[in-house]
Length: 242
Image 1 (tube, rainbow, N blue to C red):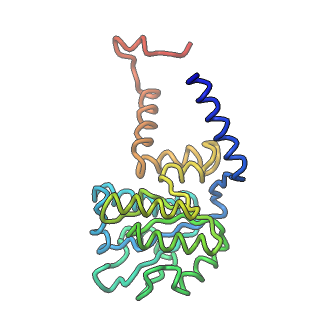
Image 2 (cartoon, one colour):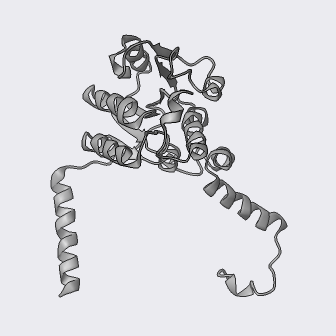
């Protein structure tokens, strides 16, 4: 009885999905622009929902996506001559020639004509973004982009705010508006699609080693085992291949 109930629930779920008209939209590195929104040295101090060292690493990884996949990058700051502070120096050094829109008043970056023009000039329909704070700078812009007809991917690991509760509520708000709230690794894999592509394994594994060590060290461990590894006593039973 229980098994049949599970089957029935599964059938209903599939049926509901079919009726919803859902279509999986994949990121396309040739149709995407990367936005780095208000990741500033003063605002950084508001990111209390992440460990500060971890968040710094995650925000740098977000910025580095543009280099990994040769995507256009637009940088923007909010009132950077006040307590919000300047854009993180490391990000500016990554992209010394990228557009940097220094908004002096607009909280929502989309309210800046200069910023809107910069996004439109890329002629891309997909937007990957992250910023500080999640509930204001990221959410306001993501909702405005959706309203303007863009497909939006919010890198939830690279946005920061004051509490986990505010982060979760803000991510839900964006998700309800059709924003895809996703992880760094999902963005990387969706942009790459196939390890045989270019960029693919050859280019992305070193990038992961720097910005996503969970996967990077897995690759390093495998390489070490292949090139310099010796099966230790007692490990014989772990071999699973003929």
